[in-house]
Image (cartoon, rainbow, N blue to C red; front, side, top):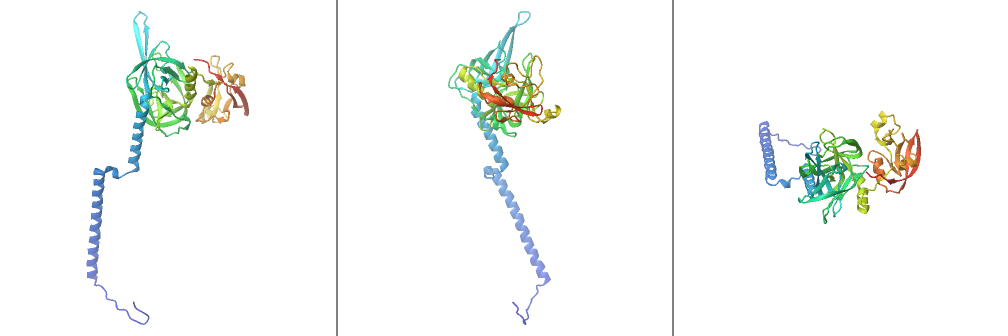
Amino acid sequence: MATDGEEQLIIPVPPSRRSWMDNINAKLLAAGLIFGIVGGMIGTVTMVRFFPGAIPTDKKQLIVQENSAVIDVAKQVSPAVVSITSKTVTRGFFGNVQQAEGAGTGMIVTSDGLILTNRHVVDDATANYTVITTDGKTYPAKVVSKDSVNDVAFVRITATGLPVVKLGDSGAVQVGQRVVAIGNALGQYQNTVTDGIISGLSRGVVAGDSSATGTSSEVLQNLLQTDAAINPGNSGGPLVNLGGQVVGINTAVAGQAQNIGFAIPINEAKQLIASVESVGHIVRPYLGVRYLAIDKQVATQNSLAVSSGAWVQPGTDQSPAVVAGSPADKAGIKEGDIITKVGGDTIDATHSLQSLISKHKVGDTVSVTVLRDGKTVTLSTKLEAAPAS
C-alpha cells in the first residue's frame, strides 16, 4: 500500500487477456447454472415419481385429509342409517287391487330400535312400513309418534344391540362447514353417501308432498341449506359433520334447482327424542302463533321497523294469527306483533322462534318480548304441550 510521499507501481492487464479471462468465467458460470437447473429437474421428477409422499403440499394434504374424513364418517355413521319402505294396498273402482310403494330413510337413535325420520316418510296411516338395516335385515316397523309442528316422526322396530347415531350441536354449524348426507337415494340406492358444505342457515321453504297425490304442503322454517346432493328417498336421513355427529335431518330439495337441499337442525329434535324415550310419544312445548321469520327483505317489503324477529302475520278463520286458548293467546300476544326475544334469547338468522321455544319444556314459564306499535312489551306465558297430530 502506498503512503504519503511514495509512488505506487500499477501494472495494467492487457485488454486482450482480460477479455479472455472474462469469457472463461462467464462460460463456467453458465455451465454451472445449466447443470444446476437440469439436476434440480431430474431430482424433482425422481422424488415425485418414486417418493410422492416426500413432497408434502398444502393442497395435497388438504385433499387427503378431507377424503379420509368423509370415508371415516361414512364407515362410522352408515351402520346406524336405515331404509324405510312403505306399501299401501287399495282397491280400484272396478275392484282391482292396486299397490303403491314409497321409500325414505331413518336413523337409529336408541339401541333398542327407536328410529328418527321425517313425518312425510311415514304419514300414510294405511301403509305398512318396513325397516331395512345396512346388514340387509328387514323388520316390520310401527309408527309411534308424529310431530304436529315439524316434519319429524319416530318409528320403532323390535331389536336390541343396534348401532346408534351420535347427535351434534346444530347451533354451532357455520356456513362453509363441510357435511356429509347419507340416505336411501331414489328409494333404490341404500346408504348413498354425498358430501358438500353448509350453504345457508335459518332458511324457510314450502315443502310439497312427493306422494302420488302430491296435494299437501307445509311451511318449514329454520332449515340448514346444503349443497350435498339430497334426492327423493334421502328424506329422514342424517346430515353429518366431519366429526361423525348428526347436525340435521335431510328433508327437502328446492324444486328443479341443483345442489340446494334442506335439513331440519338436529337441536330441534333432541327434546322430541327425550320425550318419546320417556313417555312413548312426542311432547313438545308450543306458543301457538302463525308467524313469518323476518330478514332484511321481509322487513323492506312489509315496512317493518326491525330486520329480525318473528312477525305474527295476519291470519284467517281457518288459520288464525294466534291460536285460541294457546299460551300465546293467554299471554296477550296479538296479530301484528313482532316477537324479538324468548326469555333472554334473541330471535335472529340462526335462532328462530320455533328453535328457542324448543329449548324449553312443557310447563316452563317464559318471558316473551314483543315490539308493538313501536313500543317494546314484555309478556309472560306458561308453555303447554302442542296438540297431537
